[in-house]
Length: 216
Image (tube, rainbow, N blue to C red):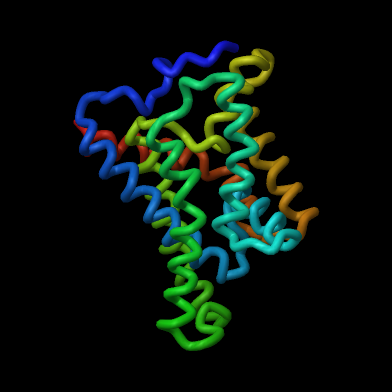
């Protein structure tokens, strides 16, 4: 596939571009906020972050840097297979999500007592609100329509090549593969990981549709 810079979404300015940019950035920050707490609750994270946690255990880098490295690998495939999936949302998620999560974890370590998120009552009380923030953030960045992260883009691309499987099936298999890979590498697999891999994709899509009014 030839490289044509004009195909890059980041050179386009869709209607309501400023609103879309604000929505995308707010979504990435919300995801990073939620992810920072999910990483501390020991209920698991989304499959992509689970895999990153596994990689982090084998490299002398922070979570944010490991996530960026993982995204760069998948980014190379997106460039080769369908460069039209690239946009501001791709850059925002790929470059900043992991580091925003690292920043909030640093903040919790300095602002809260040691072991705060290890207290059983707090873990269960905080879980659902935190997961809701993460899902709303994911819906917001997707709703902005400024490109997907490499991790999210590849299932769309693969489903275009593998016609015998629906996108939903491809996405579940994709998430499960990363969940298994994360588990093998030592990532935190739990109820959140399983829920995101099998059930919460439709929830994100539903929330995303409700948020479309923000850029109408």
